[in-house]
Amino acid sequence: MLPDKFLQNLPSDIKPSDFDRILPTTFRVNTLKSDFETIKSKLNFEYIVHNGVFITNHPLRQIQEMDIYKNGEIYVQGLSSMIPATILNPESCDCVLDLCSAPGSKTSQMAAMMNNTGQIIANDNSRIRIYKLEANLKNLGVTNTITVHSSGQSLWQKYPDYFDKSLVDVPCSMEGRFTSLDPKSYKNWSPNKVKELAQLQKFLLRSAFGCTKPGGTIVYSTCTINTRENEEVIEWLLKKESGKVELVSTQRINPSPIMEGFFVAKLRKL
Image (tube, one colour):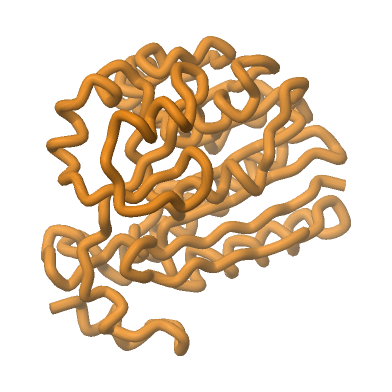
């Protein structure tokens, strides 16, 4: 049973029954090592979301035993998780920050979008997670990325006005991943945790703002659905940096049978 306090604060367009699902296995082709037609010929799938992104009826463990997974030709990633990098749209000439990067899902996605050109600084504050990030990037053939082990909140001091584009995929309460069929998905949730995370998210977003060049783009994302970690964080930055940043767009992805709940906001530093 999902927590009562969580259900009481659901947005009006989301129903408790929306969490009665187990998400399917989805993956994208790693174009640094393979291509759409090659993977299509090697693996059965239910359908293609678009070129290079698949939903498969194979269990995750079965996918992980395949050579195309072990060799880094494909990368298992949620559909919603692929949206932030797509909205940031890093290009070959860009210098890009991934502020909270481990284990590297979005870092490697951006590296592929950039065809291993330009530069990505992939930061994380956990040494253990950095090791996992570096192993993933190596396996996926990523060569345009430098990993940094640092506090995301203070990174702006090291890289003031440095990046063309910044991705801030922050730690969150992960409400968008909740499923009523698996109590582990929500066992650590509490209103106090949401409050603590929202404070951290504000500092991380403001640090990314400080790291980004005037005229640059910042994308903020979470896999949660409450306004405290989403809209209120964006509103806080807009107020704190009034006249220096503008909101370009927001996108909320509600939980569904194939997608986890997500929030994505695109900002421009003036």
